[in-house]
Length: 347
Image: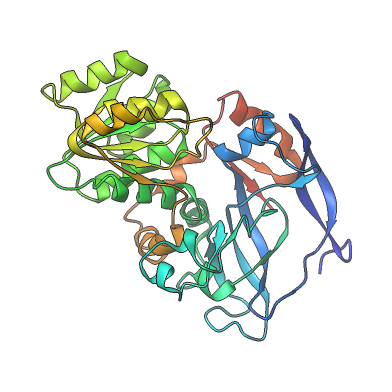
């Protein structure tokens, strides 16, 4: 227990632009399937910016954060797969990982799923429901330099990976990536790992373009909208990409992704949808496959942890600002103003 007794520091959103670090009660076990984590690191997600900007209505005050790694401090009586002292990576949806939907690889649609189960992860401690199906232990205590990459696996790497898989990125494929935030950038890393032949990153920002190239992008397109689509077509012999990752969630980005994809191609969409409506006839005539939604990160966690542990991939490079949790408000501001790609918060 910390020096403040039963209290901890946690990030709370009070309203648009109003982020504070409050003293909150340390969570306790509620169900026998729960675990309590001492959070090692958390981070700010692009999806956290929607309520921060006032675009998503939330009940106020609202504990923030859903990406986390940490050490298991307590487990409920029914928890079998993780034990006290384990270093674990978690998913942002709680799932049992045993139902038919989970076994098919769609843990975010688990019959017992708890969306936002890890809400409040930007804090010193976190209660995780359905711990056996939601948490994955690493082979041991990680070296400190691996912690950012393991944290990325909790959401943005797993989400980018799902986007690449949903887009059927692989050998012989040209992949276009709409969105140069952390998810889009890690979608590039995923497409590269999956063997894509060519990866076209759509980005207007020099720092993000540089990271995109380091993750495996072969081409950069700075245009967007119809001009961006025309450029993708130009680069692909007039046909469009085989596989397109949509990592923004707006009407413009979704249509840009669909229009950039050749007939018979696949769009993997993982940008949280905001006011997106697809014109039916246009979709009907496109001949494009659409697949996506909230990423079943749990499906990929064992594989991603192995790739990180063996230092095959270094997704932690997306974190370009690290702050103590007390300075969370500055982290939100930096991401909102695009002066940071992704902010890591040290609990």
